[in-house]
Amino acid sequence: MEYKEIVDKIKPELDKAIAFFEGELTKLRTGRASPSLLEDIVVDLFGKKLPLKQLVAISALGPRELLVQPWDKSYIEPIEKAILKSAVGGSPIVDKEVIRVSFPSLTEEFRKNLLRVLSEKQEETRKTIRRWREDVWKEVQEKSRDGEIREDDKFRAKDKLQELMDEYNKKIDEIGERKKKDILE
Image (cartoon, rainbow, N blue to C red; front, side, top):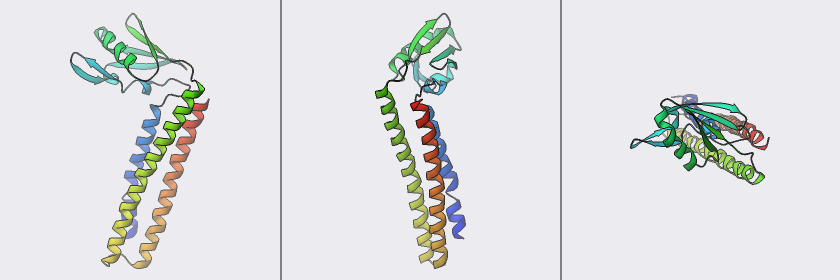
């Protein structure tokens, strides 16, 4: 097995880590309300716990207001209770067969808290990527000891692995900067 194959096999895992990071960031509220803020709220409906996205259509009415349209009007009361219990910070208002969820403007304190959470999520993603790097490096070293990889290929693998880590860390930084800009707007 060549060192390139060993290093390249973690790319899908690194891509998954980046995709998960991006998904987590969509749940962070910025100055603009997004349907992703509400879709994972758990609703207790007739003894079952279901995510909101399975029960409704969610759309943005404006920068700070979302419209929640339940598939069945009997869902309105449990959905309203679930939104009130959640920590999204929105105020649900029942309007006939829909629920309007209004979000207040972000306070400076709330923005600072969001930036802290963003930083934590960036670091978690970096840790995941470092774990993958360590696993691959161990495998390269084992194969080098077993004579399956030449010594100079071992060091080429280390360089290639570092290039890959730099590339993914740059992606994490770019995604984080975009979200930071959204939070501060």
